[in-house]
Length: 409
Ligand code: ADP
Ligand code: ASP
Ligand code: MG
Image (cartoon, rainbow, N blue to C red):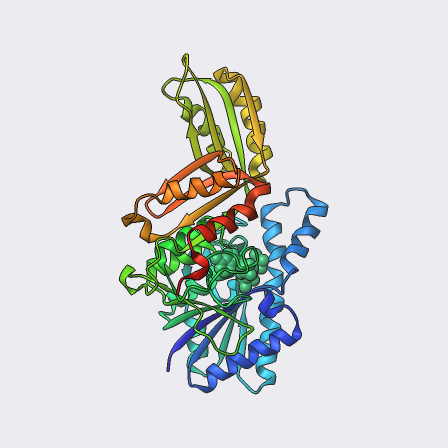
């Protein structure tokens, strides 16, 4: 008998038929004698619909009220799934995040989980219930509802698995595992049987939304056995996230290509090249709670230099405003320019550590297609480039091919 946490995403509970089919899968696991905790997302499209409603009243919705609202999608799903389970003759009980007491900090819309009270879940499991928990949400110390950021139900799933010391956390979604790149962009993409935790962390942080990055972080910290699987298929082994590099069967140099369309680039031209300038530019950005990703400072000339960085696209207008109004006049920069039509494309693989020439192959491949690289950043196991958004699909396809990701075994 095992304790299994299963998380089902929006498409997997997208309509009544799908919910019934999830209930049947859960029933099969239950019949095998396992204890099951199920985490569900809102039905597909529901979170977007709620956000759209809120934005018709306030362009930037009040963060507390926003969470009260968007958390309702998951509340509907837990009740429907519990009904479906009860209808199959199982014992089931639903819980919102607050009812479990998934305690978070008070950072509305992107709250972090601090603690999970297992008492109710353990008692219910002991009594033979399937426990159904709303993903994506928690409660702060004062009892305010909080949400965990888009894709946050993955994090609820893995965090519950960690708290309950579950034998496995299964993430059921609309693809049958983690692929070498998003199969919607490259149909030749292959499912990976395993991927190392480090690679998955990079893939998620670089834009592969198959797992929310925080869920991967939890899996690493608490060594949760994490698997991504299809909710549309009867059986299948999916993709296992591994913690040891030598557990990895497929010794590829590059494991995957990730892309992120959510960034924007800002350049400040002709700033004085002197100590403290990066701080003077990025200090006010940080104070405004804007996260900065890539940063590039050009080699100076005649005491002047250019400075570029990327931010999330939703922070673009705010960041431009701060730089134009506060920073540029203060430091004497010539001009602030911005481009929110960029994409970051990245190649990820632990094999890069032991292989030279990966970056040059990536740059050559893009050059052969006439794709201009605007920014570059590297780490031990990834190379990222910023390119014009219009070349995104082409870049992902040619890199996928160049690194032979379409035909490895
Ligand atoms: P869910 O609603 O189940 O949480 P998501 O839409 O959040 O599902 O994530 C699944 C989607 O992630 C897939 O449909 C796929 O388009 C996308 N995706 C992006 N990169 C990858 C990848 N490397 N492997 C698999 N899926 C990926
Ligand atoms: N429903 C939330 C979203 O759409 C959380 C999730 O699905 O993981 O982002
Ligand atoms: Mg998701």
